[in-house]
Image 1: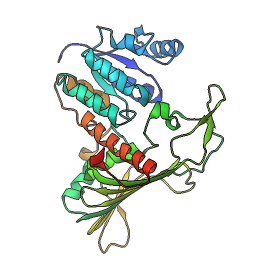
Image 2: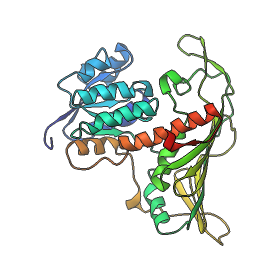
Image 3: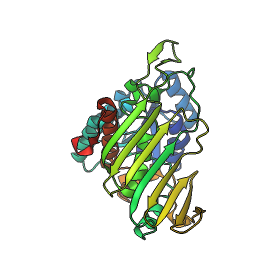
Image 4: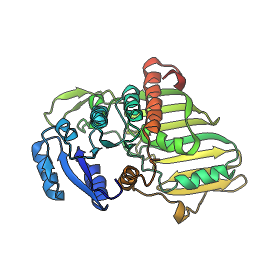
Length: 345
């Protein structure tokens, strides 16, 4: 397929698809956005008109079954990620699926197994973009011994006061988002890039606003997703991790991830990197070499992988299963009030 036009169909044209994916695909040579299926015919028509997309479909199943399409971009909420992926792979379509990967680890494993049975197809998950600029530099610093032994890891994300009157967001709706909790999976995916996986988790979460109104009809719905979460994890590398994700911690400051070692400390905050060695008085900004900075190139890597020009690294379905396994362990730990080994999941 090196010279052929690759026809892509889009299921779900929300904010990220419009701002990132569609411009990303349109910037590539010999790639055509052939069709779109959004939640309503009207919104599908609007997106098609805005971006010069030829076809509009009445359902995602109709799109996936279009023999003219070579690849499918899944930009929906997580509740459709697995069904569309499984159908698309069965129809010999390449798949680029928005994060989070699936509703739960069972669906994630079904997606991964389906992709393994069709090794000629490219199946890719949109990666966590939060730390792309610094990932390579952090890994190089760790490999060079900047931290010494990694002893502790801390992620803090949340800087807002609770808003009890806000309508139900899809991320707070378990029927749409499944077991995904706020930005937990996004941060854990980044952590895996730096230090690997966790072996054990203990989690406690709280949902302070028990009911929220649906914006579409004003009806009250029970909220099942925590708006404050603390996770303790024992990492395979030997470090202990603390992850706090919250929508109730007003004035807590900007999100950050900190690695504490026997010989040094590294902090990632506001897309910059800070560090200090034992004996230093304070953290100083660290240089991130320009040739180590990764940027958003999801669409290009997907198309290049289809053409056989590169191999998917961010993010593979196998890595998606890994972060969904962590999320599942957090859910089980909260529900059962106990520590959960990831080997159980």
